[in-house]
Length: 380
Length: 260
Picture 1 (tube, each protein chain N blue to C red):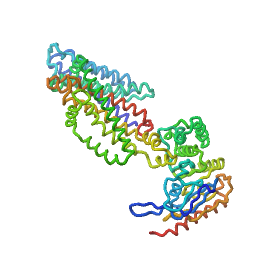
Picture 2: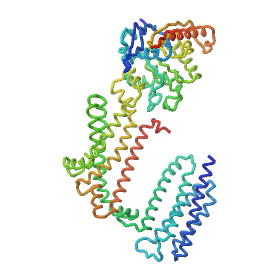
Picture 3: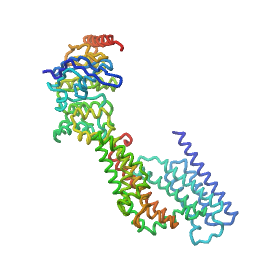
Picture 4: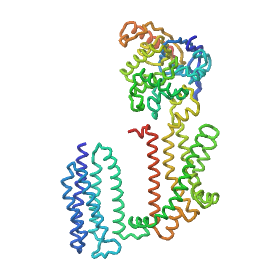
């Protein structure tokens, strides 16, 4: 315990020292290479911040310390991005060595701030919840800042990798298109296909469980269907069900059916012999032991399938739109905007897909927690 | 009419390595109100015999009657309560809900369910734990809850398969004492599988000593201990003499064991 505390302090002090040294070096290079006043100010700010927090780090003022480090590091990053905004006239080469030294220094301080927050010990539920949100947000924010600083600093061509700010701008400008695409792909094809595919997989699993004949016949066919390549299935579905969303929903059904089927079949046989004997001694009927024992026991398996399928469904629907679609939809937008070199729009669609997919998964995980709280993996 | 009547019962399992004679020529008669222990080394078929009575295994030959009817009919009438080696409570149900499980299956009304849950939880000293989940309780408490679950069915016959085998000595003593007072209070018939000699002698009115390969009854010893048995009865000469008889029976049964 004492060891880990010491090593953490050593790490934090090393971070601060390195950040301070880099900021000083950056300031010197700035002075030598031709004055870039605002960036010099940022260097001074970072050094001052290191000076202030140096004394605070070993103390217990983790909140205060983390907050100062975060504000100063983010401000420094903001300043670094400023003179490079479109329209401004750079006086000195803004992307020289001092720029990178400063960026790294600010990044180290941000790291130190996350270290501070991560080591806060509190019994308060509200604070714990707040911290659990804060740390990934800080982490994500600095990932984006790093991306922005790098793409701008290296002048990466837009087509290769647009800066996050450019993507955000495009996103804000085209919310109506994005919303229409989201409605078409996610709210129609994904959700309807997902519900039908998972539902069918579940019901067929129950049928298989009831009849050994189906077990021998249907399971291998289900296996075969799952092995079909999506790029082959999608055009066929378009021919069968037309250009609009039903053909995409059909692809999603094909993709989600099998994981649900095998998981439910496995889950239904997860109960132990003793638990089944117990039902036998109560003279329970098939349906009674299904609802009171085997389905609850299968829930962790079923939720696994639901979670796996949530991502599969999104991928399936987007890819399926590459093979014929009306002029709306996330997959359609991605394929056409790539062709027009509008990579920022592609990234905006990717952002929508990522957020929607994560939320979908998150909601499922929450429901799972509610229903399988008793499972050893969920107990608190 | 005896509660359990076994005549010339044999049970053979067919396995890949050929037939295994789990039980051979069993004759046993259990009267209402008896506490019968089946004791013997592992592989002597004591659990198989109990499972045959419960209709969880089917006899190959011979006759077996429970309450005068076939084991299957007795099972369908919910004539017995079965307590397994492990508590086997469902983790997604609270203790009270676990006790309600057989009652729900039998289609017993809500009010009656609540009444029986309350009564039986009190009987096993778990009155305050109805709202807890099984995994929040100790092993001994879980096993007590599973006994309450078996009692809630209100059977006149209780079948117990090494219910305290996995528990430590102190908890085991305590539960033995509780089981005995429960038996005295409710006047149920109990068939109890164990491999502990003191446990069998302390609890039973009849001790069935079994021997292995093939599983058979070596000797049935009738206990002359009084019905009221405090824990310290185990230090009396009568108790020790009885335990000695059981031990010798087990040893003799073992020596008949011819390696195959």
